[in-house]
Image 1 (cartoon, rainbow, N blue to C red):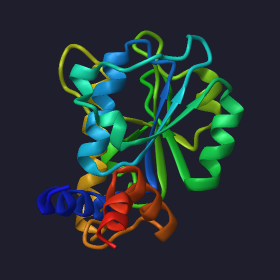
Image 2: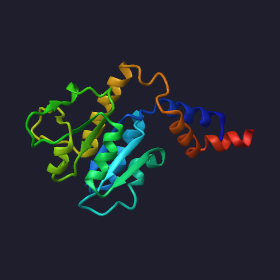
Image 3: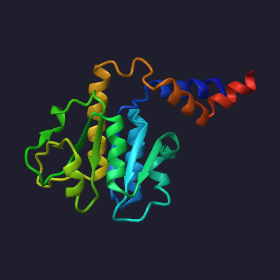
Length: 201
């Protein structure tokens, strides 16, 4: 591993945000999932949750869209909603869905995305299910002024994650490593840093 590669990996690890995540419920198109993964990697979101209760588990994601982003993320896959949300509640204080058909919506920009938070996005056709909506702490919408009132899921996710990035950057969350020592070491080993260190020693 070159010194430049080592420095790049260490920098990426220092920017990771372990307390911000995305949940994708029954998203059909693997290319949409792959595009979401690429955005997650870009803003430092390490964990992504994929919940498939109505569709088969995806065998792979669109390599062209993700540019191998999946290899840099920690992917949690579930077939049962309750199991997924039990694990989410252990790690995140708030869980918000984005669904156009609900009342009492908050605007994306009104959310506090600096707290441990999970953002839920539904599938391309029906959006977030009623079952999942009932388990969330609230619903948010992305402001739009056009004739078409919905965004592609990967675009909606990117807009939302970059708002989280903006808030967290202003709060100084990217200035110091936020991963636990254990998770940092685990990822470093997975990405080749620990192996490199062993060779040097």
